[in-house]
Amino acid sequence: MAKKKKVTKKKVTKKKATKKKVAKKKVTKKKVAKKKATKKKVAKKKATKKKVAKKKATKKKVAKKKSSKKKALPINLKKQLHDSILELIRVTSTVIPNDVQKVILEALEREKKGTTAEYAMKIIEANIKLAKNKSQPMCQDTGTILFFVEHPAGFHQNDFKKVVNKAVVEATKKGYLRQNSVDTLTGANNTMNLGPGHPSFHFHEHGKKSIDVKLMLKGGGCENVGAQYSLPHVPLDAGRDLDGVRKVILEAIVKAQGKGCGPGVLGITIGGDRGAGYVDSKEQLLRKLDDHSPIKELADLEKDIVETANKLGIGPMGFGGKTTLLGCKIGVLNRLPASYFVSISYMCWAFRRQGINLGPKNEIKKWLY
Amino acid sequence: MKRLDYPFNEEKVRELKVGDMVIISGKLFTGRDAIHKYLHDGNPSPVDLKNQIIYHCGPVVLEEKDGYRVVAAGPTTSIREEPYQWEVMRDHGIVGVIGKGGMGPKTLKGCQEYGCVYFHAIGGAAQVLAEKIKSVDNVYLKEKFGSPEAIWELTVDEFPCVVTMDSHGNSLHEKVEGESSEILKTLI
Image (cartoon, rainbow over all chains, first blue to last red; front, side):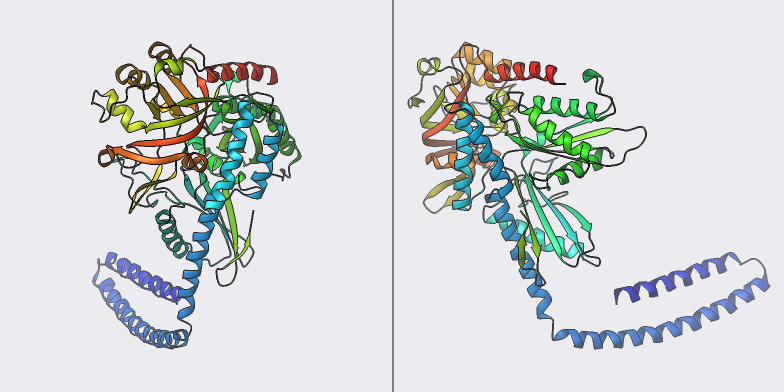
């Protein structure tokens, strides 16, 4: 129905355009006469359109009658979507994903017994258990709320956002999320996590019929140690090649020290413009920790960065130790001839990301991590 | 593992050294960005901080029928208080600061001159640390600055930390940063 309305509007616009053209022709009497004739035609057209409109109205009524029986379904779908998203938020905030837990436990094993590094990893392990058992946020900074949605064609993004925003408010009331959205100019923090840019939505259309919703909660401490380099970067003699990329990534790790709540995971994008680079670097963090880039050079670099970073001796919390980095994911975008950006997003050990595959009734069909 | 029990004083904290794992029991006062700026601007503290410990923390606190309950209470990044912390040591006589990520040379000098220690709590461990809080005894400036930025007077039992800056001019952060920067040069 919406499409038909648009078509009608277009016709009306065309009609107006005709009138304008007609107005310009006000020069000679002959032309005036022509114009009148045109107006008549237009009037006829109007009448025809009215009839069409009436017909459409009738159709609408019929459609309404047909849908009235099924009216309850969309409301249920919304309610079910709300509940599914609320559960996604709860689990993301309180339960560490399996792939992250695995590398954290490996790091704990690796650290020398009796060191402050081992002590830190033990407390981290205990915290993971406690947060899950109490269903309370593993970190009090519940972060920027980032939704990544993969949907089929014809999906209504605005309707989806409305339902998700309600679920975010509900999750804040329940304490799964901290009140975390500050008005940058006034300093007010009273909106239950809603406001310009909050939550952050990223939609992608895919060829499948179902909907995948991924959620990342990214705390401020780790976001603050993110970095973006423009190559060549003279202080490190880092040129526009993968060796230059490697140099700036390693420097960013040293600069971050323990401030981003290490050991952490890096999401990195080479190329793009500044904005696209940073967004894609966060999307790299959606990859599972045990995967590797399909591009061989990047897969090699991912492995090399983790191994090299763990020789730096920064360790958990920056206390010194064997584990500085838990993972590294690198993606690539095309760039302009003049630009060569390396965008680095740091994710803390409290790597909160989950995802759900929604079933036909918007129920959680499958967990993605 | 060392213990630091209430009441705290300069003599006790002077005994602590970088790398010590310490269990703290007693009172803590939360204070972060707004409070540090407020004290720096010359406003009087609403509570006597002499011989007390400040915790850089914006806790999640629920107001319930029988009082306040802390739901999550991990440390926040301390370096933002670097311009102010030494002054709070000098003017208010605090003997300890708990936070995460470490602090800079001004704070380190302050620790040495006024007898104070920087304790590093485990960032992100909001549940383990909230469990150590036994009671919420008072709250100051909540109306003015809002809940996360208020001064919460807490009693903790066996709160786990690591000394990363002591009162003898030693900083683990300075050391690790220096060493890792040197190693970096050999790796790139």
